[in-house]
Image 1 (tube, rainbow, N blue to C red):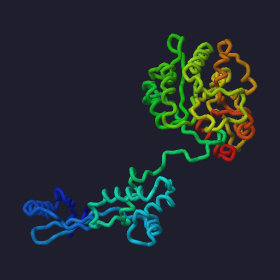
Image 2 (image 1 turned 60 degrees about the vertical axis):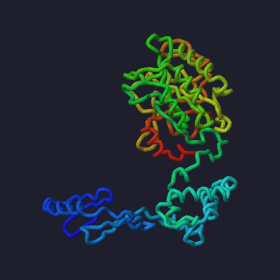
Image 3 (image 1 turned 30 degrees about the vertical axis):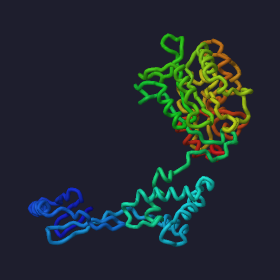
Image 4 (image 1 turned 90 degrees about the vertical axis):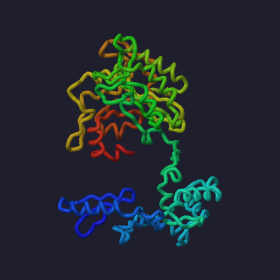
Length: 411
């Protein structure tokens, strides 16, 4: 610990008793002190210890002793208050009182947290704290109790279990979402792989993104970050890894968002891959326009595809001038950008770029249709509730929407 003498600041540690001068003019004093320490007897073999603070005594210059206290963080008021409450203002907490705290205050399962279980927890705490205490009493002090509260393996911060009602429509929930989930590193030059997908699925991520592009021969589908130096990975490899690891962390539905840059024939090939690999796990709605989405409870162990319908995606790519997903005027009234497609065009399976028919089997797999809002964002937020749809907004547009239409964004 840091101590200050009359003319010099120095540091003494129990193991090496080293000194550090704070000023050049004290070099002689520093040398003297160092030599004195070398010549002085070693620390007591059994230095006196304060059971609460942990203190050590050392002989200095063979003529006096100095005591150093190893301080611990003191329990804050709310911890002291809880300790007093469950010990009836006592000094020690026994196993029965600890059990009452765990069940009543921390909502532990009363059936699982029996008296015997509470005693085992208390014993484990005391085993770890025994070297700090001179008492053999089978009870916790306030410091022991404080230690227990921050002990991760004995008192984990949260139970890894779902405790919310999961029977509302899916859109009522915040969803743990990934972005560019297939990249091993940066977005410009890293490798694309199924390994990052496996990692995020093991962490419980429920939305993963795949950017799908034609391969160099234009006869198969790759996953990569387009128009960069990233190396591709075959889509089929990613889909197989997703199937194997989709529900290792949680049974609740997995959403795959596809950023589709495919021709109609490759869309058809992708639809075949999805159907064959995922089979009955793949959720396909009975209607193209769902009025309400099923609940997470109903969709357990199901995989959901979300992307723009083929024609809508291609039309949205044509205009390049307007970079924002939506434009919101300073007065709060939004304009209708030219690149916002009309929903009435969704049913026309015409590829306006290539002139080919879009793949109907691919379109049927899209459970959550993505796209930009029709007639402006505010109208979409207020009146677009009659069918399930995922709005595609840039970060700037979402920030403006939250500022201007916060009540409509969060319903």
